[in-house]
Amino acid sequence: MNFKNNKWFLLVLFHILRMKAPQKLKYNAPALDKGLDILEFLSKEGVPLTQLEIAQGINRTPSEIYRMLVCLEERGYLNRGSNAGKYRLSLKMYNLSHSHTPFDELRRVSQKPMYDLSEKTKQSCHLSILNDNQLMVISQVRGHGAVSLSIQEGAQFPLTLTTSGKVLLSQMPKKERDSVLAFDKHYVSLKNSDKKDFLSLIEAIKSKGYHYAKSSLTTGITDVAFPIGKTEDAVNGALAISMFTSNFDEGITLEEILNAMAEAQNEVNTLIGYVDPY
Image 1 (cartoon, rainbow, N blue to C red):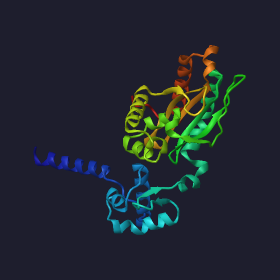
Image 2: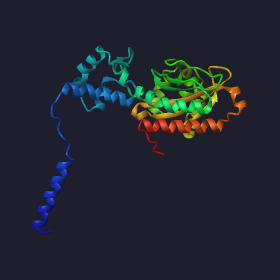
Image 3: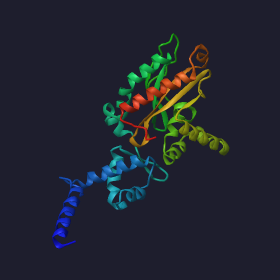
Image 4: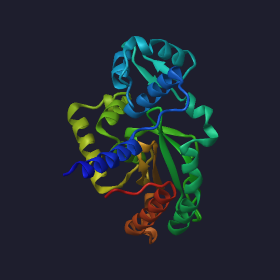
């Protein structure tokens, strides 16, 4: 390559690198940056972490983030365990932005698909999320049949004893799932062999993509639940139908219910911008 061509090559390369170089922030706010780094990192990890672990995770020293951790804890954004002194996110940010949370948007866009699902199946349906290691119902649509179940919005149930809870667990990364199960008294009380069976069930649900089972909490009730969204975006939940088991004798087949729920799942996922990678 002669000098002239080499000169042009270097000039073009310089402009390409300049275009790809990250843009500097117009204003610097180091303290705010540290606070946001801490909150974003804890949100991403999903498990309680020590000061050292947080510092390493955001490429800072423990002394750099000490005052920020104290401030965030005093303002209620972080909770710290009394034993190991590990920090975890509180629900303050959720409460501050309650009318603008992703879950409120999820509840809003799911109303029509849930109404259509209820109309097709003649059964009540509800949408649940993970809240403080519990299953919390955030929305429900009453069934269009003469008799249907009603589940109160805001009600909370143990994850491991509900069909929807098991579906939520099946969508979690292993690290987050283990952390959640460590706080579930029902799971903790199981024998090791039963824990192994439970985890095998969770993996089977993940592979199948839904869960169908008789209720562990109420006799005579059958639950069918499908996952909504994904954990990584923090917009995830479980769409479920709870119906009297005897209703299957009245011409409503499981296949019809699964097809209707799959359609509702796809519609809600589309509305929240989630595309199944598989």
